[in-house]
Picture 1 (tube, one colour):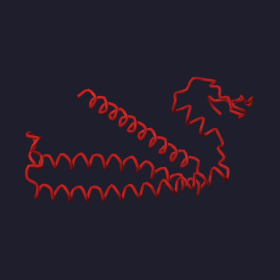
Picture 2: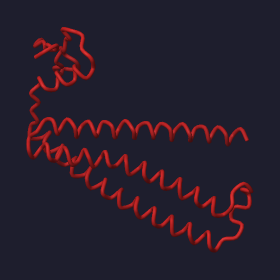
Picture 3: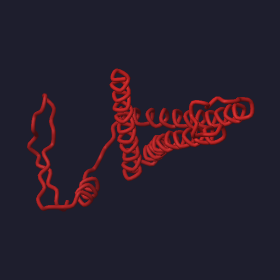
Picture 4: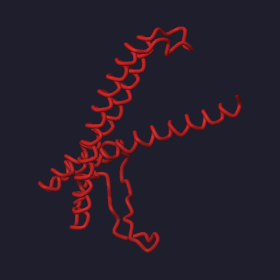
Length: 179
């Protein structure tokens, strides 16, 4: 074990044992994580393995469902936009700077970007499900770490998007009261 020493004296935090980690020499974050994860023998008991297995199945199912709905949303929106461009006259009268075709092209572009963002986000969830399932089947800790890393990135991006949505909602609410 290079650079990390796990001291056997436990700390008690709410009546649970928490191992204390002391860094012997200064390491970069990547060196610390790679050394620490390689040196620790992670054992997944039956309950944790079952929970991870169920979680990976649900992650794959939800991801596939979202992918299908994204495809359906693009098809429905493209068909509706095409129908509205042909049949409508003056739908965008209040927007003098857009012609009908430009406005619908802009809307289709926004929907495609949103769908790609959602599909990319759920690709991370699918990646978690696939890698975690393979890791549990082959008992490969590296695959499990990659799957959990993908889940971590999914939650980081989802949290940032949620925060932006909340901030935009607050801004809209304040703006509506001021006008």
